[in-house]
Amino acid sequence: MYKFDPIPSGGQSNDLKALVTRVDQSLDQGLLPVGVFCDDTVFRAEMTRIFGRTWVFVAHESEIPQPGDFVQRKIGIDSVIVTRDTDGGVNVLLNHCRHRGTEVCHEDQGNAKHFKCPYHGWTYNVKGEFAGAPHYNEAYGNTLDKKAWGLKRAPQVDSIHGFVFACLSTETAPLREYLGDTVKVLDAIFGLHPQGMRAVAPPERFQVRADWKSGAENFCGDAYHVSTAHVSAGLSDFIPDVRQVSVIARALDLDNANSFIAHEITQWGPMFEHWAYPPEIVEQFDFSNIDPALRELLRKSPPTIGTIFPNFSYLRFPQPCAPGDRPFPFTSIRMWQPVAPGVMELWNWQFEWACADEATQQESYAGGVFGFGSGGIFEQDDTAVWEGIAKAANSPWNHTDNVMLHYQQQRVDSDPDWKGPGKFYNNIYGERLQEGFWRRWIKEMSAPDNAPAATPHTDA
Image (cartoon, rainbow, N blue to C red):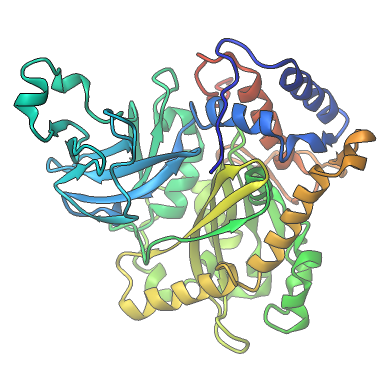
């Protein structure tokens, strides 16, 4: 278990301040110090300065449909319980008894009327309110203020298209304001049917000996790696055009380290419009409330991959379950869950439209797991190279020589004809989106302890 030792309140260590400054100055030259990964001081600061004040994804409402339903999740390294209460509300509760601190919930999911501490029996309802304790009159009489001793609750909880986010800071802007134009893209991805999407199964979880930021940065804008890291998929004829995946990739920057890759997969044929969903599903989509520019993007070059800072990522891509099968789109939501410096858990959900029949949902689930499950044909490639980055960060030679990582690809200007949200780039090269991720990281890591998390630029 990781021992968390917080950075002193009101300031940051000289080592951390110097590193964040060096990252800022290095990025101006297209360079990134390897010391941002796998560092204990950095990790401790991230838990409070990033996960302690940004909006963090914790669950989907389809996972807790009934009163009393709950799932156990994480915000940073804090265990939290996400519950559906009897009024239909969603609560995010710190999973530590207020009496002596032990966990009150040890199940990944379930349905409960109360959570009872296994140590002394203090009991809480699904809203986190204190509900009772053994020998209450003898032990406490009228001396216990019940309202003051409930479980700690996230002060801000909100959802968008069923995705539940929580924020531990009261100073950070509400969720939709915090996301800015990213909301329009989420509408285009998840809001095409009034019934929305549902989690087909509980998330798969597996541990990777890599920094959580490696996964988040990769999904925010890196298609350049596909023709090398995933070349085996092409050699096996599983994805024949894998070497061209980066060539047909486009970039959509929504500011504030929220970004998406859009692939012009219609170059492979007209059947790939709208992510290659079959006509019987597309006919059920409602595009009337979708931004017009995004509506056309969905047809030709739909958003396929993306990251919402800090650690929520999205993946929707058509792929067969086996060579020769028809490609069918799957939707994967993944969370890069920090565990310790240089160690993360990868949480991976498979989603499908709630209106789809059982066979379609299972086909989508199988495709997602086959490609990006813990033993998936693509997942194995990605996690191996991310673990290599962690080894580089732990290299004495690299640290002695102050080695920098290279972010200097040539860049093109954004498309001046783009009328949709954010900035659109007609190719993925240039590493702009990855730099945007690190610029946001710098902003959060250098802000005072009581500062709100960053919101998008609002300049006209």
